[in-house]
Image (tube, rainbow, N blue to C red; front, side, top):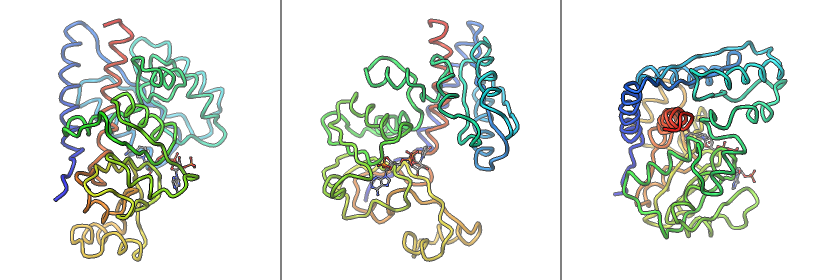
Length: 304
Ligand code: NAP
């Protein structure tokens, strides 16, 4: 039986460690602070931000939720970010994406002070990550590494194949795996004979954004599969393709009219040595690592 890598339990452990660090900082008169900027009313973004703000409260981190209207301009957002860059009670700045189309997202992310860039999206932090200098690494890829390490999965010397090359998941995940001495291959939509490459993977990271894309024949038996994908399934025929005969999923689908599937076909997990489930795998780590980055930023800014 493949081992299920329990992301929720690992995230809870990291949050516990962060809460302990927050207590130690309080003794020195420091309270880490996170500003969350949520523009307009995108339901999914509202859920994510609410959960981030709640987690701050749970761990003793100060948070400030700032909600500009969806008519906000790039100039107004730049002014807001500059103000947050200057505020001493704010250590981390989180700009929830996506932003309305009139706002220049790149210009805004570039305007965040690298010292407060807890999402790790700023080019300065991307450069630091690549050159192996201490950096605020993007939360989801950092979570992938935590799952592997805390589950005792060896990384050094292993063949790691990352499918997806986005700046927020694929590329930084590959870079972090490289720093852990994996031999890395990065695949994308132009990769020829993808299955031949993924079958070489001891560690296969799927960050594609396509439901059930990695099928069993693309996986080396015994491999560790890290499924970063989050895709909502609402179509019955599609549901059956992934979950026919799965009573628990049937119940969720009947109740909500939808369920979540990763970028890996659930049947591919059956031949893995270990895998992250969806939901409950990589997802919970993202918020935990955001909290860890906020505390890290608070310490780095004060030279602690
Ligand atoms: P993205 O920016 O859309 O990037 C997707 C990548 O997949 C691209 O590099 C693309 O290649 C590649 N790709 C697309 N079709 C492919 C194909 N047929 N064969 C091989 N590669 C293909 O997505 P993302 O932001 O990295 O997110 C990836 C997934 O992770 C999504 O499901 C997202 O919801 C999920 N996610 C989860 C979390 C979490 O907290 N767990 C956080 C962030 C994202 P090209 O570059 O050639 O186009």
